[in-house]
Amino acid sequence: MDAPQVMQASALNATNGAPLWLLAELTYRCPLHCVFCYNPVDFALTERELATDDWIRVLREARALGSVQCGFSGGEPLVREDLEVLVAEAHRLGYYTNLLTSGVGLTEQRAARLKQAGLDHIQLSFQDSTREMNDFLSHTKTFELKQRVARIIKANGWPMVMNVVIHRMNVDCIDKIIEMAVELQAEYLELANTQYYSWAQVNREQLLPSREQLQRAERVTNEYRARLGDRIRMFFVVPDYYENRPKKCMNGWGNVFLTITPDGTALPCHTAKMLPGLTFPNVRDADVRSIWYESEGFNRFRGTGWMKEPCRSCPEQQKDLGGCRCQAYMLTGDAANADPVCDKSPLHGVITEAVEKAQRPQREGNVHPLVFRDPMQSRRLSDPALAGRRAAVEHEPP
Amino acid sequence: MIAPVSTEQTLQAKPRVGSRFRLQWEPAQQSWVLLFPEGMVKLNGPAGEIMKRCDGASSVAQIVADLESSFGAQGLQGDVLAFLDLARGKHWIED
Image (cartoon, rainbow over all chains, first blue to last red; front, side, top):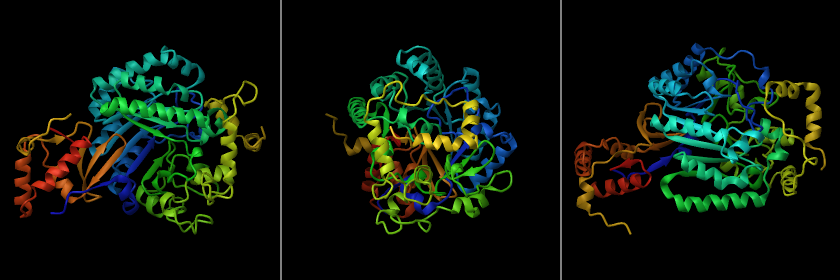
């Protein structure tokens, strides 16, 4: 018998290649208006959500391919009245089931039904808008809601991951955030620095923290880690704008993650739909196996064959696979370019420029007002006549 | 300081899978995996064989004996104890 060894999931993914992670975005409907929402800016154009039977078929087909982690997300997944039915089916199939929720709508009755359906875990996220953030910081309304929901989660014996999106306006309160997570008895705390896609990209200027803010937040987090030990596991991920190498986005294109959007579009990540010239299959027209292995969209950026310089000859190409295709497209105009976070990219200047700008103090009047995620703004921002103007605004000199 | 634990005590312990984890056989991966919120650890063959015997009823001594008879091997105690130490440190098992 060999000495027992373990392999972390990250190490096996390169050879496995099955869609181990299925993210079921059940709906874009959401009672909240978060300024960093990762749902597509044009979410309001989605009309027809998948029916219960469609989702059940997707769950079965993906499980047969080897999917084992299933996230029910949104929007706010609790808006779907068939959530319990879907969780029960996923549980029956052997998935580890995760509910990613803001907690709005998680009553005791609903929690009991989800428990009975076999739900394994709840990730409770903090909604965030200026007023609500103030509520949170002053421990008023939001705090009461979260306390109530956290109590419900604990009473049902679920492990709780608390997810707080970190940005320029709340990063200085990281100590309060950690203390709240401890008080609510979360087992895990994700201090998720904003990723600049979708709504967060629209609001990037107001959300990107300064270097000094980040360094302080990381220091404070480490102090709490040392003090709290095993009581809570904290994840603090530095926003990639402050790195000089890109992230290995989604652990490789079409390698581990499969996202199904509310209308049934299958994507290698939840923002890939923005990429022009690529078509992604829909589960209404094709089965998950052919989608994952055969579709043009899922094969387009697999491996390294698609790479251009500097990635093509880069000795680190396997480490990060050229970074994020969406970020490359958003910031350089070509999805096959190196992610400009990489300082080997000739277009790395777009990142350093944004970072430089983030070091300056912001006053009312010298930044654009925050754009809140709501259907009206979504329709406005999806208007092609306005899209060009938006791009121009984003690149406007200070 | 943590009091040293004798090998004798360790062998009498009855480990079970940690409350934050679920152990499961995955046909698609042909391996045992540990599942936890939004994550997975894939166990190699020997690690899976040990973990699946951590049922809270069998002692470490029994687990070692069972492995030795199942695999027709001798002297596995050291490997098993080393793995259980690692697994305990990661909360994969509880005693």
